Amino acid sequence: MLPRKDGFVRVETRGSTLVRRGFPRLLLSFFFLAPLALGPAVPAQEQPPNWQAQVRKYCEASDWSSAMRVLEAEIARAPHDLDLKAWRARVLTWAGRLEEAEHDYREILPVDGTDPDNWAGLAAVCLREGKIEEALRAIEIAVQIDPNRADLHAAYARVLRTAGQRIEARAEFEKALSLDPTSAEARAGLNSLHGEPKHELRLGYESDLLSYTVANEGSWSSLATRWTPMWATSLGGGLYLRSGVLAAKFIASATAHLPRLGAITAGGAVGHDNTVIPKSEAFFSLDHGWATRDAPIFRGLELEYGQHWYWYQAARILTLNSAAVIYLPREWSFSLAATGARSAFSGTGVEWRPSGSTRLGFPLRTWGAAQLSGSVFFAVGTENFARSDQIGSFASQTYGGGFRFRFSSRQDVTFVSAYQRRTQGRTDTYSGLSYGIRF
Image 1 (cartoon, rainbow, N blue to C red):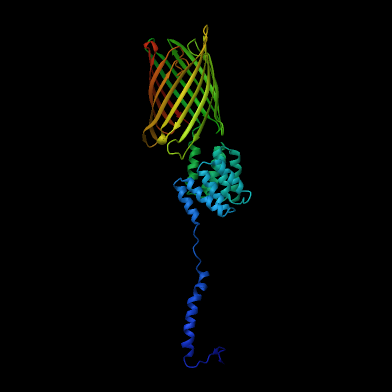
Image 2 (image 1 turned 90 degrees about the vertical axis):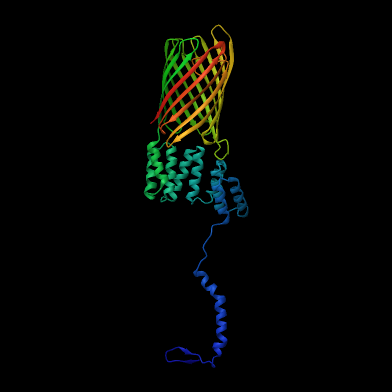
């Protein structure tokens, strides 16, 4: 090697030996080493884990059991993977297994409480369980961790709305919209606050065409108010014409909606009876429902039990009422009800008389927000307690049906008609019409 004047080194070769021997080796070295040299410059695109794709596919098909099998298998391989456990909690929530989902979230959060999605998930579970205060605490932490996420503010607003804090809920929905002006969830939440009715006013008229005496008539009105998610009240009154005698009644009740017990209602009535309607009444009922969203046939079940006392001038009546409503697909429903009536008339002994009824409800037609639905029913008993002011020793069979036309989510008209055959060849043709408006 000889130095050059420009500072570089000149390599002396013997003819073309370097070209003939060195070039193939250089070419082979470049072939094997180039992938290593270029590898860091072209990183491989990261793919989501295969289990996650499988779980998403099963969840889209509402196949919760298959999604859980995939997750359980992955958790067995990596029992400390919090991402897997978080996915398990989400799937349990979607499947309606709320207690298990809450348990999973509460195991994850002490280990890693920095993920707002896990706090939001716990809040969603608690909200569905009716644990409003716990849902509020969880979603507040999620928003504190990441205050710039519109979806978290919308979730916070939903919990506040359920808690009855409408002003605070409106502020959170507006905050979500300021962070994401395209958020359909936040915009729909604001609309729900504007349009959610709190009161329902109903006006009604009814008549009984009796084959053995003059017709009975009555008109009534009621106002039901949902003050908070837990408390509601109902006030009403009516005028009744019985065998040419006019009577009046005032009725009031209060309902508590409790997360685990259901709806508990208690109330009473007083009347200017004129011996044709009860002088006073008292009643209570317990109503509890279960939703089975993923069941193919039974979408829900509602059970009700109640007791009603009637005090007439010449009689005391106690009824024990029970009912079951089965909710079917496409807004169909089927119900069964039974009543046991204990009668105590002046100068006579005490006796129990049973009665029962069944009803089928179904949709007929829908025009946008308007909807027409119908129902048919059949009742049988040894005493008629379809309305509180009809008592007496007789057997009957009742056939009837009705229609309900809903103009919008705020107004509807309901018509009911029934034909009753009683002992001694007597009949009763009943018709009733009511109008309801929500505001």
